[in-house]
Amino acid sequence: MSQNEVHVPDRPTFLMTDPAAFDVSYRINPWMRPDAWSDGHAQAARAGSAALKAALEAAGGHVETIEAVHGLPDLVFPANAAVVLDGVALMARFRHPERQGEEPVFRAVFQRLKARGVIREIVDLPESLFHEGAGDAIWDAERRLFWCGHGPRSSRAAIPVLRRTFGQETVALELATEQFYHLDTCFCPLAGGKVLYYPPAFTPDALATIHARIPESQRIEASEAEAAAFCVNAVNLDSRIIMAKAPESLRNTLRARGYELTEVDLSPFILSGGAAFCMTLRLDRTSQPAHARFAAE
Ligand code: ARG
Image 1 (cartoon, rainbow, N blue to C red):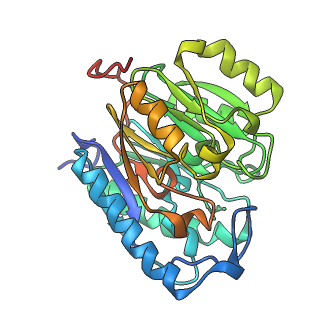
Image 2 (cartoon, rainbow, N blue to C red):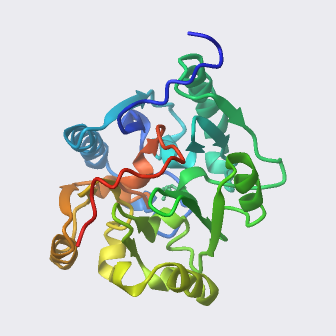
């Protein structure tokens, strides 16, 4: 294979991290509970991560698993490693020192992916900016744009860098609270154009943007309980949505809209403020028009 040949994978390909070094030992978001962490959680985390991988594979996905690194517990959230589209990876810069040690680890991972031709180009953010990867830059395959969260973790000024790097439209959404500190905790575009989101997580301006861009018939509002169960932090593949254990209310809402749910017990990861979406990073996204394979009711 030549240096520049890109092999964007032909099926949904996800990066995940072996959870062997996962724990909750510091607190950089209000969900994190170092005091509540126990050995039992470590065991449950291994089971939860394996179940998520199995669910992605059952839905037709392929999972690339990277090794754990002791001392970097949040490496299990590779959504924060980079923004990836069309084989280009824009590497993250983490706001909190607790996670900055992940940057060289993820860089080495992307260099290996590049050597294999899965990634074509690795791009760096200017040093003065923070950006926490796909957690704050969610590709909407239907609308062909990035929804970009900013505020608690990612700098607003990183958004034009994303626009230039990928040559795609970006829509800025300011996050209003420390609870919903990454966009992926409160906003999830779905196949068919619907969007599952938690309105109180957004500033009034951001909500106005969402309402202007997404017609009411395509907006699915999560309740506080549904958002707190980290169900908005979901992975969607066609009609299937893979998420943490969902309240009955959300199951009913999504089924009524034509989606099928796979629920995974991710409670140890929720103790760190993360769940299905941020435990993964899609490597195969392209800016090509989405196949109109699925359009839910
Ligand atoms: N403990 C991690 C942090 O606070 C959780 C990250 C979850 N990632 C996400 N994209 N929501 O950074």
